Length: 561
Image 1 (cartoon, rainbow, N blue to C red):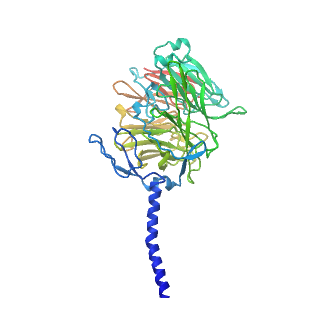
Image 2 (cartoon, one colour):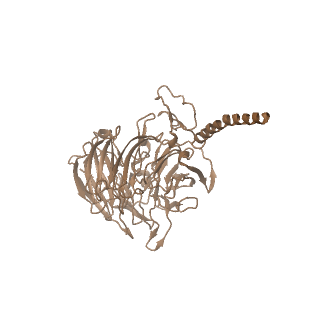
Image 3 (cartoon, one colour):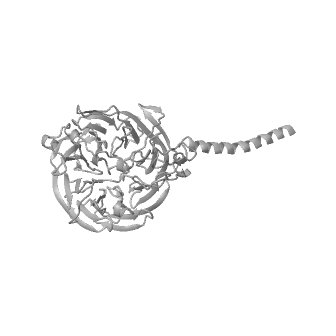
């Protein structure tokens, strides 16, 4: 008996020693294998790669001229495994590993071509205007408008509908199927606009005249088109609706040649590998110019990485692509509704987006794996904006809508540490909810020049059913600096424009059909003009010319005077 008692006691002691070791090991593996690591080493701004390294345990040796970077720890409650996330990367429906060397440039270097090429301008989503405006009279003037159509109840231009505006180089412009009198116009700036009547229009910024025939996909386009930022003649467009009358068609994402407007590639949004059977693409892509790769989020819950393998022969006037597609897909018991409607934002190799359940993810594009995850309360259609102040001082600005919360829920406006997911500050605003959502559907302004201390959000239906608030927050503290109670709510995103000496003005369109000119520093409304229909789409600005479409079936060209 004494022998068995001794054996039992010995086994118990062994178990007491082993179990904690397994717990520690399990936690280590969860943090280091499933999420790469919890310690992120941020590479210095002047490093060769510019890639944030997720795989090193020790700080990276930096040149003496570079800022000293510190190891950044992600809190346990923000790790993907804490939220039950499981993910994989698919190629042709087979699971694969992936390892890349992605590093997006600073936003000022995103576009090689002149103009606004994508929703909110660049990979930080903070530049919906290009150039500078000469503002003397502080007035808005209607210069031109064109009539567009509708499909069923989908009229004109809807959310988030921003045009691209690009100035083509002479050698590329002459190779395109632009009408002859416009092809020979040296300073042609072409407006390209996808609309709810199923067409993509091509217009001269100066007068609204057609530069070529529209592309007709036959089904409503709700999101914004993008032009390749390298100046390659490639056009990217999502689709919002799959029905036209009683006919159901294809729904997905398209890539067109801008030499002859032919479709080069189609991603079927209703693919079998998706966990959600809905094929819309309201999100707008970004292109990694160095690696010739496009990134796009679908409402089917997939993040697409598309190696374009593009080939442009200027002398022959031909462009081609041979895409290779990787799909990042994920699921979690916490995520009740997959799909992303906001547009992906990217800092170096970190991408950011929020799904319909309200889960904000940071996904490393080098491994296509999540780094951190945060619940931001509700569905978020507003696109995240990024600010980089150097070193590890990188922030996200985001706000949710009022959807799943139902009547009298709150829109939360937040500033978040982009590298760790930790909250820096937040404010909340109670909003009404009816057949149209309240809260933030507009994307924010990250102020520059004389408003470099401000971030500006629009919150719909935040003080009555029809009204909204345009609010300037202090970037550091989150305190309100100025506020406008708008008579009509806004889904259209505010746009910041600047004079040569750095004075700021804001363009804000509303659901009542008005465009406002606002002084950036004070929030004083300087002018407003009627556009004859609800403006859900967001303007793009080239120098002093503003372009925006309305649900009233018009596209307007407006001059700031």
